[in-house]
Image 1 (cartoon, protein in one colour):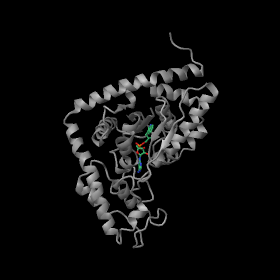
Image 2: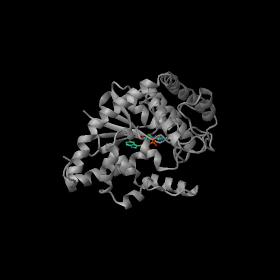
Image 3: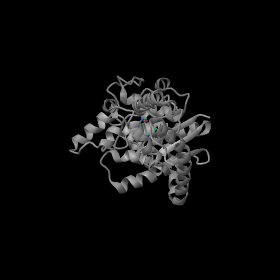
Image 4: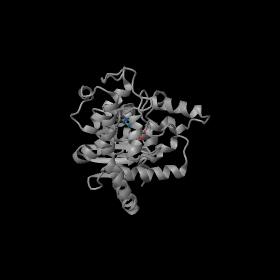
Length: 334
Ligand code: TYM
């Protein structure tokens, strides 16, 4: 059975980008076709300036939202990264496989380090080694597939390199995983700045649709989306990034077979496209918000899902991490 692993970082409220780029695939396909493991990767949230109470709150909220979006604990494993020690145990071993040059080449490191420096903070060492912890998340479970948005593809590529290198030097230990990106909306852009990604930790929020936004707020954000200077609706990510973003969002909401370029032919004005996109997103998110409210009323259920998830995850990761310890030359504890 295909082993699938993916995660979400509790650095902000989950967005439409997270949903269309990753979570929806987890819910609609991944948990039905493989042994799917999903993780709220809280350790990763400590790599930038953070408020401890907020990280704790957002971790619980992310887990609750993933269940609200449709992850079914009967069909998949859901847990919190820091509840399973194997991740950090393996990260150290992989640090002994990776080079600092590889880390410094990562696009997200460059962007985030620049952001931290701009606000006068130091760049944490863990921000540099972030992709190694992410590789440990994936390799500990022997994942074959990693369903992610486009921004994570480089990290999964690095994971493949580290796995292959370790296997070659120390003997076959890890499955070499591959990233699986959605066909549309792999990179949902900010509605106010369609040249940059819709990111959950951005300070300016008017171009970001959050999964928990009220319907009227969602509508307003989409109706006010920046469009382009032409007046024709065409799907061209270079020339018309704002319109292309709306077409991608609408196509993703409509489902698999729907292509942004085909949709463009149905519209002669930006207003009509925005209205249909707003309606589609509101309908997509309505059940998630409703189920989230129900789950918030039953925090014991979420706790129990996370407890059982961590227990299963520990059992799966332990043998692989023990193998890696042995292979790299550590004396097994007796
Ligand atoms: P994170 O928390 O930033 O995002 C979670 C998932 O959502 C996708 N995503 C998007 N997709 C399309 N458009 C967007 N605007 C958008 N924003 C986010 C991301 O690609 C991701 O799939 N490093 C990861 C978390 C992680 C992880 C892992 C993922 C840690 N360990 C192991 C997979 C496997 C991250 O920061 O995702």
